[in-house]
Image (cartoon, rainbow, N blue to C red; front, side, top):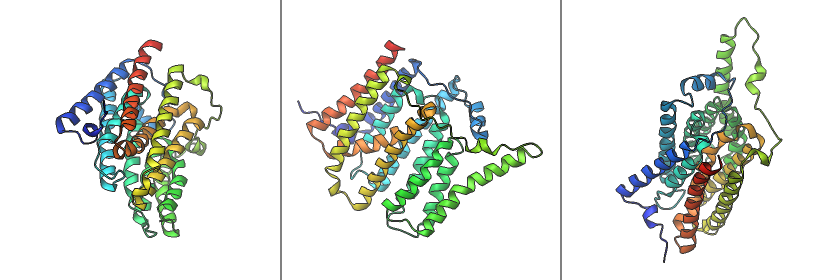
Length: 332
């Protein structure tokens, strides 16, 4: 029997609504399993305010987290349609992102990461507009400015700025103009933030060290994760590797600017994966970013190579996530 993804790629409106509702239900079921990583209390002023407003144990915080998940899914659809990362319109990036976010209950209580992901996707809109334009100073400034703002919530995101400079090179838009514009974009929010804090702490000792404490932790231990998490991570990574092989086998049919965007997304996926290792105690904060990039990359071959092999791969992906949710009720 042939497994077709056509109805998932271009679903009817009723089917699309049903799939979104099904993913939201999956989100609720996974959330009820009750396995969460502890959220560290940040000494960051903005993060403290956010944590005081959106307390993890409140209903409104959970609903806001779900709302931001749906918003980010919408932004993913828009960036794909705007820049044709996949040559045809497809619902798969949205569906896969919602499945991942529904399955990863660690992400259901961290509104700061959800907000930062929204800002990150908006910054991609600016960066993707820089293709072969060494004078794209506005895009370079705004893109890095938005990432710098998001780093006020998750300070580790500041390390994405050098990755963005590599992205400028990939897009063939790196120049002294774009570099300086991005540098000003990086510094502006932090100068304002430190200035406000200096005024707030005026008359007392201002501890500048706290602004640049990124909580490095290189003692990565497998024992940190449960057996189901390790098995799931390994299998979901294998699915990604197979999908990437399929993606690169057909990228020669894509335009150069599309290939550049896919390469940049792959670079970001590697960087966020490394961040999980380097910032082990805060790894769950980067999961929404990985889910968004994972969804865009894996959807490329699943959409453009509609054969029985990739149909089976998609079914395996869905079964893995459902099995992972079920395992939470058994092992936790």
